[in-house]
Length: 272
Ligand code: 5RP
Image (tube, rainbow, N blue to C red; front, side, top):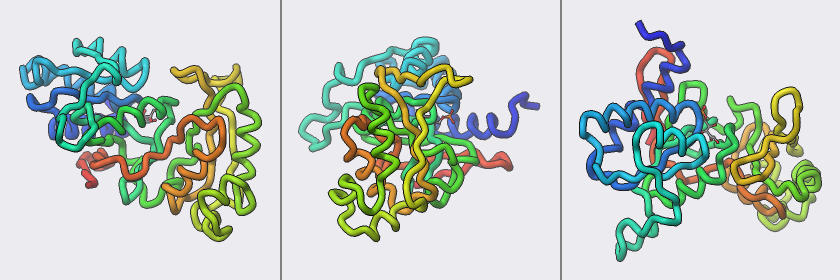
């Protein structure tokens, strides 16, 4: 019998299924996400490598310090995003990565996702954007109809430490009368329709026992922005990005091609 609890088992089965479907000898460049679910993807990659089922030239692109360590410990070759050439010159695609496998904090019915629970969403989004395909892996708790329905820690927003408290106040005031809102969502009703709360609730992410701000791999802070249910993720992403000093928003809209979930009953669901 497996010693893993149900949640860990479901992360593992989602990760194994996604790797088995998407990572074979034809994959030359693979993006490796961050978080606890991706650890199981790395475990499966090690097995496939030992069975000679990976491309011998495979390059892996990390999305965080954790992810770089995972790649190295798996005996795989790490590469930097900007060291990679276009994969298929002349094809019209600018991608340099075949496929990226990454975790998620919540995924909605349209495959929009909240990411950044581990504070790595800036690099995760850069790597996803450079990929032909983004495949998400998660346990059953992350599978939602609407973002914000299950994940109650807010949308992670990476911000400049130079003005974090001003940015926080501005985010808290986003609503029908804010300047940023008017630029993105001209009608006051649109903001009411985009998310549930009348105004966001914003918290500076702190280390345990409020020992100071969490600092990202990029030297920035994270503000967790709670909005209730997010009915229009793309509008909310654009709204948050309008605020000067916001570096990246942990909303991944229209980016994922597939999401794999380990279910509570041991089965696996794939959403495309
Ligand atoms: C890190 C992320 C992670 O992928 C996300 O938080 C999911 O993590 P886990 O697999 O531990 O549930 O976005 O920034």
